[in-house]
Image 1 (cartoon, rainbow, N blue to C red):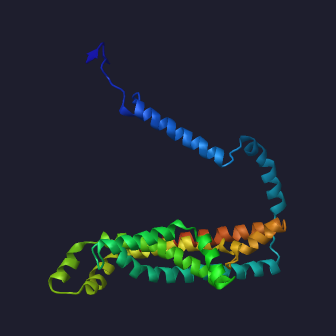
Image 2: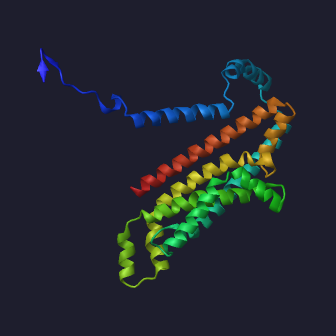
Length: 274
């Protein structure tokens, strides 16, 4: 209804209407949970306000970074070892993820019970942090980069296995059904129709897994699983902040570089797919 040029029966949008009693209780509960978590996390406004001077002191003591040739050489080899751990672990993990994903994907070779069991195992692998896997393998195979590589392998299987399974489930079923109609075996259908159709998605997911592996491998050294992480820990333990800052900058440069390279490769894959 229009009165004097103005709308008189305009209702406010649903998003600003008065909430029901149940909705209000839900909001109140959510707010309570947030404050409860802040309390449990030791949130302190006083510490936040007094931290800038301490952070500024750290920055002042950490700059300039330590760029002595001897230090850069040692850290450079540790970074190379870190990349070796990440690439080897990611490649092996991606390869092993394919057969795992075949059993996790619904409607391929296994029944619902096997699908659920495999998916539950993959969920368990993803639920355990990679640094915890590194601790497990340090106990199993000893200190060193091999333990870190095994941790990356397991973490990659948990990451790629689930996504590969979803990618295969989402492929066009037409080619697979055509092969089945002419008597092809299930394994032949998967090899000739399902996997080729899902390959672009496999490549994209694998590149994300490599990025994840590089980021993870930089900290596995904190628990003795090889890589540059141990140098970061030693730098802070000895209050050698310039060396620690050098490590941080090297890690940032390598991770950002890998992310850009991975993004470029994904763009090429998507472009070729189109």
